[in-house]
Length: 416
Image 1: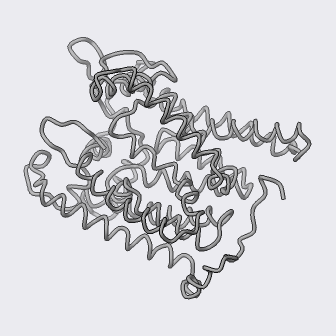
Image 2: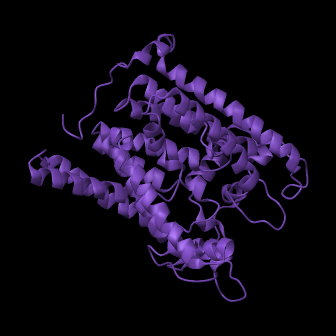
Image 3: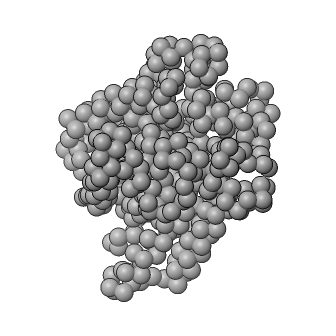
């Protein structure tokens, strides 16, 4: 079987298969939704307990309900976009630098929420959380089917468990665009695995205007092109002309989608750098005003955080190198290599995109959620002790993430 062929969806062959005998009588989609529902109850309890402590007066002047608590931070930007759209004039600081503004956020999620409000009469907070929850549930179903390409039933379901209880999994039920982005990314990967090339083009367009992912997808398909050329040259697997054409076309299309928002912002504001200047406004809180230079942000961030925490920028940069090497070890680990090739290349391509453009700060943990295929890799080992430990540690991680990142404390700026 070639490396790109779809693995058969076989039953577990291990002695532990008896553990799943009862579950197998339940339709797979019910199993997945049960995992999703239970995990969301756990996360809701965590957020409500933290919300009770937080009081909420910093944002709303009122004690928080759940939906108020779940639509703060960037949720406020999405609400502003959904209600008033994007500005044609960029806000400037006294020094003339572009300040934080709605152009940092893509339009699909806020306009979808606004559409739901118009249809149902719901207010923003309830509609925003509802859209996120529906997208998250659908994402779990699609991710399970993606995992089943290369994993057994038990491994795939455990991968869903790990995904649903991940330390940053509260993002699946708050007023952010991540849920929709993960859903469409999973759909895209499943289409690629099944060689449904034509359908990938509209999916790339929508997901690229939902989350800034066009360039990451281009990195993935570019890596796939190189991978197939390498296998073709070695005589391992021919690179058929049709697949060659689709791979090149999808890469070019993804690049175009990746730059589309920059061009739209330019057309509306008259500034070619409106989008990139807006993105830079967020990192200026840490390192001051500057230019966007690809593949330097992590070292700049490592230096800044190293100076803050250890009094040594060099130490921070060294930690950055260690993090990169650790990630590569995970990417090329035996467990990760158990996944289908598109899932692996997506994780690699998305990492390249983050390393090229993203500045590491408190949002980093949330930004890693699209690497959800790694939840499947984590489920490959069949150790019960390991699985219990991962679930328990993840739930503790949720509490820590909500307390440190989601809770707003005056004087502290650690946006999730």
